[in-house]
Image 1 (cartoon, rainbow, N blue to C red):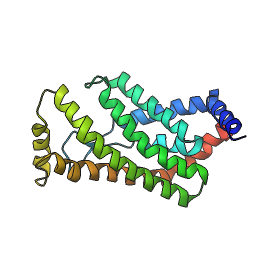
Image 2: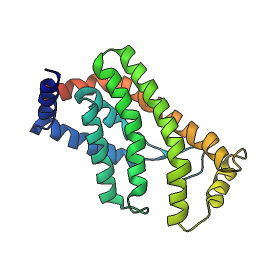
Image 3: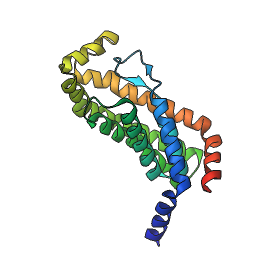
Image 4: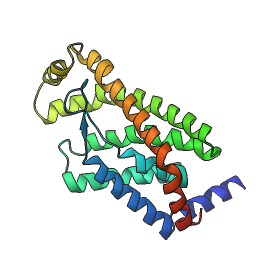
Length: 210
C-alpha cells in the first residue's frame, strides 16, 4: 500500500501542472541568483542570494522530490546563463549544499504541515547546510577554485584576511566565513519563506490541485 501511494505521488508530481510550477520556481530561483549581496565578514567570492526561497516553497508545497528537481533546474539554468569555470564540479557541489538544506526541511514539514514543523525543518536544514557547506568548501570548492583559477589556496585565504583579520588559514576561513555565511543564509531564507509562504503556496495549490 505504501509503495502504491508513493508511486501515485511520483506520477502526480511528474504531470504537466506540477512540472510547469517547478520550472517557473526554478526560473525565479536562477534570477534571484543574479542578485548577490556581499558580506562584511567574508571574502568577495562568498555573496548572499535568496535563490533557495522559491526552491524551499516548492518543496514545502509539492514535497522533497520536487525540491530536488527545482534545485536541479536552478543549477542547470545558471550553467546555461553564466557558464562554468570549474567544469561543472562547483555547480554540482552547490547543488548538494542546496539540497542539504531543502530536503531535510521539506521532509520534516511535509509529514506534519504546521508552522512548528516548518521551523523545526528549516532549523535542521540550516544545520545540515552549515555542516555540508563547511566540508564541501574545505575539501572540494576552495581547492577547485584554486586549481581552475591557477592560484594557491593561500591567495584565497588572504582575500579573507583583508575583510576579517581573524582569518589566517583554511580552518579559520571555514570557521569565520563559510559557517557564518551558511548559517546566515539559512536563517534569512527561512524567515523570508515564513513571511511569504501562505500567499504563494495558496496560488500553487490552486493550480496543481494539491
